[in-house]
Length: 306
View 1: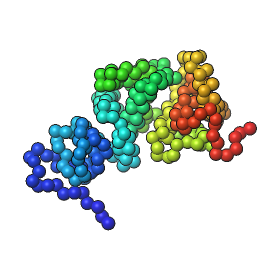
View 2: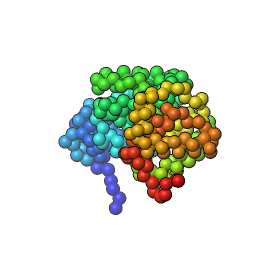
View 3: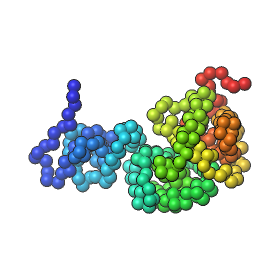
View 4: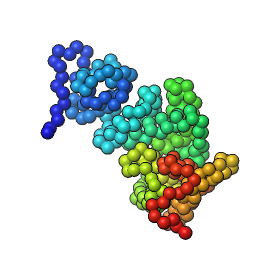
């Protein structure tokens, strides 16, 4: 049976947008359609509060309209926004707008999903007292100075909106998400990167019960592997910035994840001749911990390597 968009009420008030509510994502986010019939996501405080599908969208309630061409990205973005505080969505959108104005290149629309997810995760992690350093901080600041400066500006915006001052390492993390959005233009060795990422992911799949495909946690892990492959293939090795105390903490409390990261390290050395630093191995172990939600033991799908 063919579904139809609800018709507009011709007797609606004069101040109208011509858009109707297609889906209420949460009290502050809804979906609709533009004049061309393309689905859009609309943000505004209280925009979905006590509203119903089919009602008209009030123009004075609109703060931001997201037009995402990819249906897959759009659906994942809606899932992400459903449980995210409005302040996080607003500041993420403003950071992306600022980046678009200051970077002389096109950004992938995936950045709305990946950066918004990261910023929300970083703020909540900081609230919980979890403060992780970025193992690639020096390299990101050195090789991507413009993106890093945008990351620093992002920290100011986050502090202004939420009252939380994230550590400077987060500026590097934000910068690398911007670099990811620029990859289509900047990275020439895409095939080698893709091959390495796939190889690392297959190794992890054979040794760890990973999150399901198309999940945010799986996307986050794949994104981190992409950044790691990018560094190992295209940038000089990271200079020493090891925190001995923190490294020992990870080795002792995330022993299984650290051991699996060691397997990945040996694999990329043998297959690609690339070196992973100790800092990068520590960071990968933390990402495996977050992606799998596991404790010390490597959970396998088959037999462990002897």
